[in-house]
Length: 243
Image (cartoon, rainbow, N blue to C red):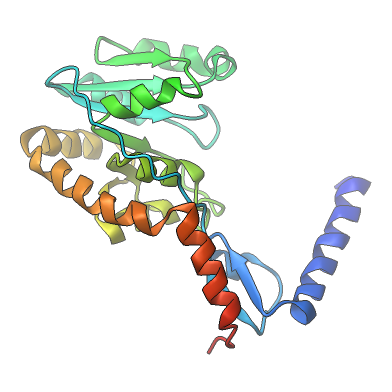
């Protein structure tokens, strides 16, 4: 640990010490995060993950295939190889894999042997992502399990919710539990055989996606940035002590 980290840790702990005396309400991305913070807070703790811009889009299917969309990093905690393998051998399923060109330059050689006509790799960003979301039947929120992922609330989860796209999520992280709790998609252990079964299930039962989209319309309204502001105002108006 270098000197900068030592100094930073001192001030992190000082912040935590001051929180105990200055805050009535502590807002955290997820309530699960509290057990990873080395202090005991006596006030009210409120779960406050990212909000979403509620931008439901008209779903536009360009084919009869089940269209899966992934946008984000590759490498490290973002290992999509099991999903790529499953899609490559599952009939009537297509995956659009969107990542930065730099990420692809680093890990593309690991994916290239797995790719066939069922998989497209693109490098889009900004407004161009709207069309990719509009074409998607399912958004892939796949992570390698880790302590951090067990309590983290990823922004991409709420972005997909805002667009009204059902999710395929890893079961262990907080995000997977959220998807399962709100019935807005399916969860998986990120193994090839399990993924193949889930994708085949969706191909054979497209009505499942309709149910997920119906649930998403409600969940999206509950998680707008405006809704977050109301949650903050209500919590600050009622800073009762946790029991």
